[in-house]
Length: 603
Ligand code: ADP
Image (cartoon, rainbow, N blue to C red; front, side):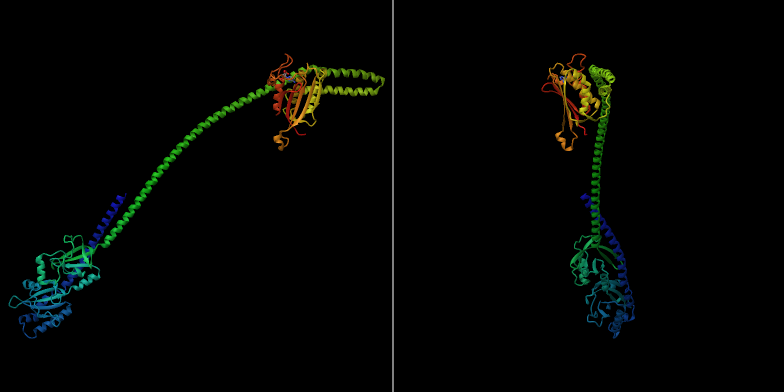
């Protein structure tokens, strides 16, 4: 990434630099066209002046007779006037030997008059070719200039002299400098003679050939210049950038040139490459920054892609897990619902079984009740017959007392007979209630003493026949929540068993006691858990220890066939449990004690 950025930055720099240079070259060429036009205009402006002067009759007359009085002065004055008017530096006339005969600066301290310029190329060239053009430093004034020479023909043939016009081109340099342009003009051998930068003047780009140096020195073309080469590196290619001294330092520049073959000159334009370089650096910097930004953006994007891929993978894994869990859950739910169905079926089955059991149980209870009825039927028979006999006796005696008119005894007898019939009706009422197949199923508040009394009433005949002493101490406020008929059935069972157990006993005593009990833990919440305990104790044989675990089992009996079915206690305990109570057996001091516990009811 770093290498790519570096490469792109470098490429951008090189491309920008090349484009910058190309632009510079283009601009330089345009500048050169203008500079050349200006230079040519400056040179051409005076091109014809020497020719015109060479044709001047006064000039020719002076050369014809150099000593004729007044002729020099006239030409001097003419040259001075023309020079001032045309703005050329100097105009002067050399004779055939190169001696100055007349000059526009005839009255100046550094006048050319009397000076010999026979060695100067513009003189020699004019002699040889008729015209000359030469740039050099003036040997007298030390001022550079373009010397344009024109041979003045002698009337007898040959050359009488040479008119020279010195044109000052120094002003051009000032213009170039002011425009901030770096322009040079070099001569045919490559020596710069005009330049916007003073330090470049009178120096060749590259070292000169020895002959050229000698010739320039001999002609004193460039005064005392040491002709030190401008380029530090002589192998430097002028087509590319070169280092040129500017002031006391060297500036890099791009060089463009145009040849001026008719003058033998070359015009150079040096463009500073600094700005192009700075611009290229800026472009490279921008490219580098853009590259880095792109690289960062790409890196961020790829990181984001990676993160997204990771997240997707994670999401897929999660989805897989969720799907697995859902599947497992569905399977478990199916299993659960299957188990639920099974359970429901089982419950239904159990309910059916329970219902069947309950029906059976009801049947059994009813059977038990009928059995008890059967057992007591003899006694009842006796119980009803006896009052009936008493009733008959009372009726007979009442009839006798009525005849006697003993109304007091009659009314006492009638009262007794009423009591006897009431007793019969009570017995029948109990029997009817007891023989009903099922209880009402409705629990109500039952007075324990009343229930016990009703059962004792049923058994009264047997109790009397067997000489049993009944000791019933049941408080009148002993109230329980129960189904009256079923409770009486239980009490009947317990009492019949007690009477059966005492049949062989020497002393027969049946004790009924009731005590209130409360659950000590629950007293704070009132009598919600209060119970009544009814103990039926007899003075019989008691229950042998080995029989104790079995007395509540169905069909467990120790009685002779036809006397007991072994259902009494088992049905009683079922009934009591239905009434939210309990039934338990134990042995007392003499016989057995059967305890019946039932929830207490409030008055
Ligand atoms: P059954 O009276 O028809 O035998 P029970 O279920 O009422 O059936 O009684 C089962 C057995 O419990 C009796 O056969 C007897 O051995 C014993 N039993 C019940 N009550 C007494 C009691 N008060 N004293 C001694 N044994 C008793």
